[in-house]
Image (cartoon, rainbow, N blue to C red; front, side, top):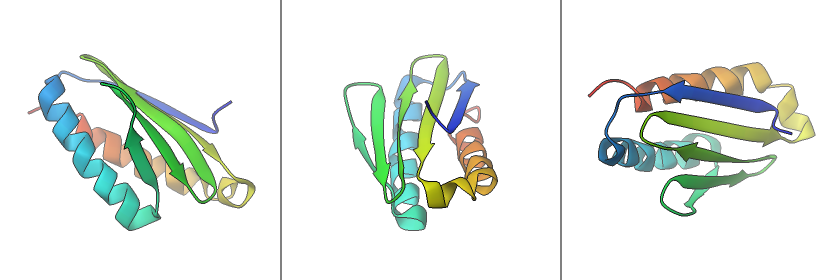
Length: 94
């Protein structure tokens, strides 16, 4: 079971969304030391120290599910806020 589950409906083209997600990959790595690996056409696997999960998307919805290690559970609120902010950027209208 995920500790954080977020989703957003969107109207962004799949191509633009894919480009934005590529940019998000870099941010996750630089800011949080989290690696994301593309798994198929519309799925990313997320792994880092004390965190794992997946991000999936299609033509109308994006979802992220994250499991947090014990130490990071104390920061769940801050992590959730940061993820929500990034999802809002990724799904912003073109």
